[in-house]
Image (cartoon, rainbow, N blue to C red; front, side, top):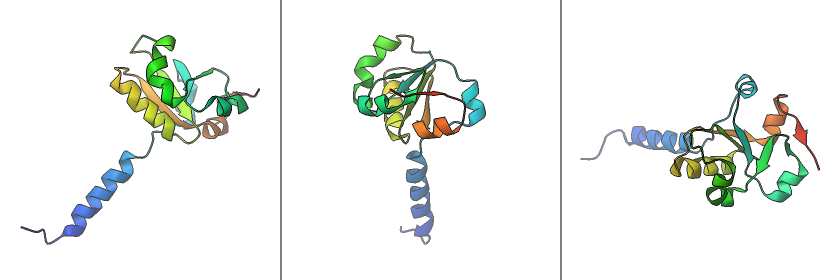
Length: 123
């Protein structure tokens, strides 16, 4: 039987697809109290142009293979960022599949700088 209200189903699907692709971002007040390690998942070239002082660089395509060199503690807080939040979200999903439990996608580098809570390092 075909629904008499196909628009409701289409709307529900669109909402699900839209919300699934939006990365989590963090407010300035949350950033001040964030502990753990910071990983910049951008390319080394992007990292060299500027990054958070406390961050290490592991490009998203290497996160699965290199995370154990940074932390084998799967309950340690891991803070991710990139240019826009998309690569950080991909990295978050990879780390979750590897069993890491405390992972936050903080979105984009320029957004973090704009919060005024984190100094950058420029080479």
